[in-house]
Structures are given as structure tokens and as C-alpha cells.
Image (cartoon, one colour):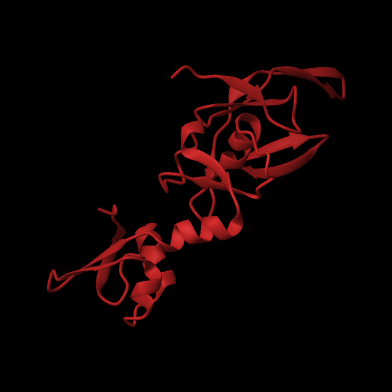
Length: 170
């Protein structure tokens, strides 16, 4: 896939985003004490937020805004005729911000997609394996769906003696 660049919405002439999820600043002259200062074009360094999403700091009129990269990509490349509020990662990988992995959806749909992921737990001591059709189903067996999600997303190691991960539905 060729890399295609478009202006970041709201930051035209300052930053561009690619269909592969990269962000770059554009070369430009900015006012300085003694005239103008030349800023070179460069690929921006992405930061990971507390929820595992890549973010980037964008500046306009001396004001900084931290924006999520997947939203920047979606706003630049995807049509959103229904004016849906949420950008969903199709493969559940928050670090894959390529255009083919993103779609707009409603907040309820995004929650439904997230809660209906099949999970597998492996007991660290006995190696017993258990499966649940969703984290909500695991709730009804005495597990905590939030803690299972934290395990699956690499934020904590174990929950109730089990290591957890998302698994594909068959």
C-alpha cells in the first residue's frame, strides 16, 4: 500500500497525516524575536496514553492540543455521513492506526463490540484453561470484567490467579 498524506483537519498547512497512521509537521517560517525562524518538516513522535492509544501534540497559534492519532486518521480519510462519534479499531489493536483498520461507529456499538470479545484464562498454578464468550459472562462466574480487560490489554498481569487474553471466535 502506498503511503498517502493529507492535511490534518483543523491544522491545514501545519501538519499532515498518512493512511498508515503517521503524522508529520510541515516545514514553515514562524515569527521570532529577530524576524522569522525556519521549522523543518519532520515525522512526529507518537506518545502512548494511559489507555494504550497513540497521541500526538499539535500546536496552532501557540496553543498545544493532544489528539488521538486514530481520530486524526479517520477524520482525514474516512467518510462519516451518519456523524458517528466513535472511531473503532476493527482488529482491536489500538496501535494499528492504518486506514483499513478504522471505522466510525456509535458509542453503544463500540461498547457492544468491546464487551462481546471472547476471552481465555489460564490458571498460573494448575494450567487450567477456561473460556468465556465475553468479559460480561465471566462476571457471572465471580470474575471482574474490568480486571480481565486490563489483563488482556497488558495493564495488569493476572486476575484471580489467571492470565487472560482475547481469543478469536470460531
